[in-house]
Length: 464
Ligand code: 4AD
Ligand code: MG
Picture 1 (cartoon, rainbow, N blue to C red):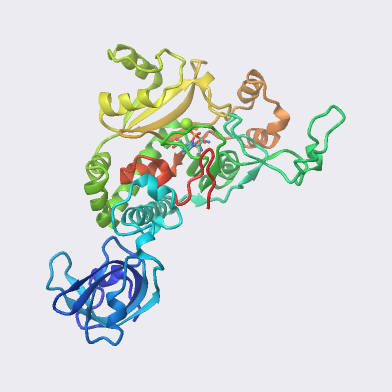
Picture 2 (cartoon, rainbow, N blue to C red):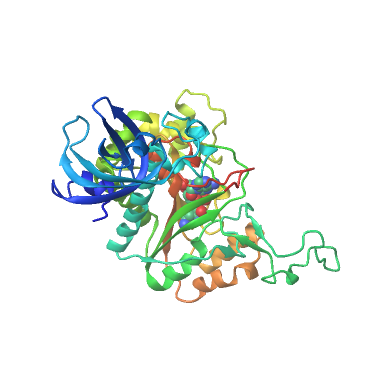
């Protein structure tokens, strides 16, 4: 039987079973008693399995030359371990070396501890390390849990397009996609670029959010979500921003802001529980080596009621807290991450659902509140990271929507299909977007979102 390391260590096979394990050498040590201990990992769990090679194996000489990173296929029987640190191990009857490491002294992923910045510069080899292996399993566990949560709650997963002509967030931070010859761009009579000659016949971009598209399916299928890559050409070199990141965007019909505030709370609790149950091995590592609070704070999120707070109340708290912030606070400003973290970490000490922001700092599609100056928007602010979710109730009233477009100098023709949703059987609806990398960063305690996505895209970096 070909067995995964995870299955062997979890006791899926009884002692005495013959198994074959395929993987890479994490470490190898030789004992004076004429045997070698090879720690093999295959990505399936945090711990490697120990394979014992006795000196009577035909290729024992080769086995003693194994170094970190070599690939091998080990055959043997499962036995109770006598050593400390593991309960089951494999007594090897054959260890075939599949791939050597050509020069162990210059192997970039040698067994010593490397800085996270160093690993980032070797993104093609870093999945072999403990830390990135653990991140990868946690990331996978979280995506599966997200799909399971929505599936169990009657949501349909909608594939929304990557290529689009609409700027959902209206922030002008889009990557243009074009087949035009940059050296010889066709021009119109008045000197503009003639996009009618481009592949799609008009200016096209990578999507910043699947929201507008998923709204169309929401107004037919009732409960939907999209989960895919999104792109932002914002030039922010921070530990929370990527040019390409994954977003989870549910959208609910016949719903208001409180529906999706509750949905956000339920979803986060569900996925935290899943990762606490399924990835205890990896979380234990993050707790010891990255941030001692990761498990504690997730458990406290699972057990706490999220606090709902109005933006206006937050402004008062920030103004009266006696702290000086880099960015001064007054009603109408967008909250910066220092403000968000003060509220979530120091004032409340639990996740906060901040609601009802000034309309002037929010997107065109958000529903205007009765006060005429705020919109039914919400952000979920997590202690330790700040905003991880942003959402809103959408403006479903055609006349209000049209006057908002006019106020923002946007043309109704550009939003023709979106307006149709308001013309035919319009319905109150609401949704949010969860930044998936911010979630993974929160769960692992890893400080920079560049280290929780396999190949980070940031200003000046699209390597690999
Ligand atoms: O707040 P945002 O911009 O909201 C939207 O895009 C809405 N259309 C979502 C919706 O209502 N369906 O982005 C949502 C979340 C943020 O809270 C943040 O977690 C994450 O996406 N995010 C980023 N994550 C990494 N890098 C970036 N550059 C991000 N920009 C936003
Ligand atoms: Mg936002």
